Amino acid sequence: MNLDHLISKFKPILVLHPFEEFFPASIDFILLNSSLYLDNQCIVPKERLTLDNLSTYSKRYGCGVYVEIDPYIWDGEAYNLNDVPYYLTYYETDKHYVLQFFFLYVYNGKKQFDHKHISLFINKNSEQLDKAFYSDIGDYGVWLDRKDIIMYWEQPIIFVSKLSHNNYNKLGKRYCKFGFSNDLFADGYHWEPKHCVIVDNNTSWNQFTGTFGKNGTRVPRLSSWWKHEFGKNSNWIQRFFGCL
Image (cartoon, rainbow, N blue to C red; front, side, top):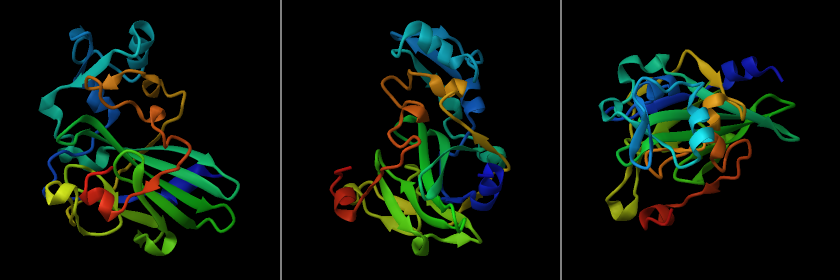
């Protein structure tokens, strides 16, 4: 497998809502503007956390430590959007190379460190995209066959909902929670990063076992989809009645 070739050929184009408030950011930017807490006490002040030392604190103090991101940067790096990287992990099955691109958002209106992902299943023989999973809430999202994936050449075009950052293959509105918390997709900011950063189980910051926000989000490595996509299709009934 020529990973660089596959990344170049299949890297997605993300389309954010024109009125998005919370934009993507790099893990470097997030940690630079974060402090580390234990039992409501700051143990590492802002500008002291790095990619290399983050996990050492959870090894020292246990999984009860948590990162608090400065609210001043919750809006992300909108001013620098295409310099913000995608992140990628990957694995293989008998038939497919599976590229799992994931995207980091500082905040989504409810929680810090909102990461969402897509999994692309690339046929080993034809080197074409056979199917994909676009993440939504938790283990839920949408499975798509090739015919349902909008592409620019072989690059999937992903529409990202305002605030919630859920991924979808269509513009418009998806009704959620009795119509009070809808997913809105519209043609706004086009995010086409210059860089893709490969992350694996040995990547230092990805070994952190604490959370971002007290009792909040964990690093991608501790997510159920990591290197084994078994996401579930969500349907309009589940979304409308808030059953996800």
